Image 1 (cartoon, rainbow, N blue to C red):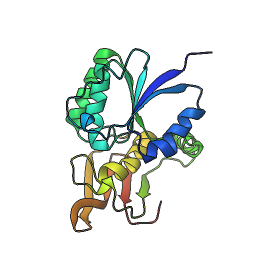
Image 2: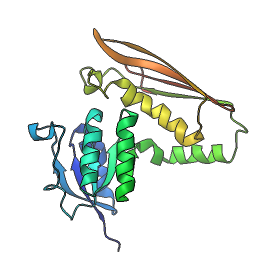
Image 3: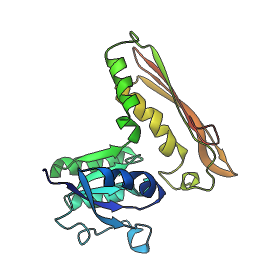
Length: 226
């Protein structure tokens, strides 16, 4: 039997406890060696030393922290020569992403962004139908990701890298990227920023246009789950 991949989990919030941990425990591919609560003072600084935590017995780091902290934990774990599995969105700006990719390539380490829907049987079937052209040549696609009101929640925060764009718009964007792999000629973004008397991206829409395909993407909160 092949050796199971040993994990150190950074961030043990509700999503991890309810959804991720049960899946890991059912798997014969992974084992959890450590769980670290990153919501403490020593982890809130930019310079993080994980060397004492990520000893040689750890193969990969699973990052399940708030999105605006992802890049600093990813870079710190890569410096410790560990593979990365990270919740979406991986990062919130290109500069941080470029640093991560360069370091991962330099160290020959895997980096993986988590989207649970990608491994659902329905998504596999949809991929197959499109690749086999069961619907002919698709001219346009519409994708939604709506969620009910969840105020108060970290998604209402005004910190860089947080908000509903990074938490919900990433789903229709990711979906269309994996289904069609297009490079759009132009992108139009429109979103409503006012929520609970605070400046935030409550909901919005995206239009992506390429030579052969148009994509219409919608996201937002205080709507029926869709």
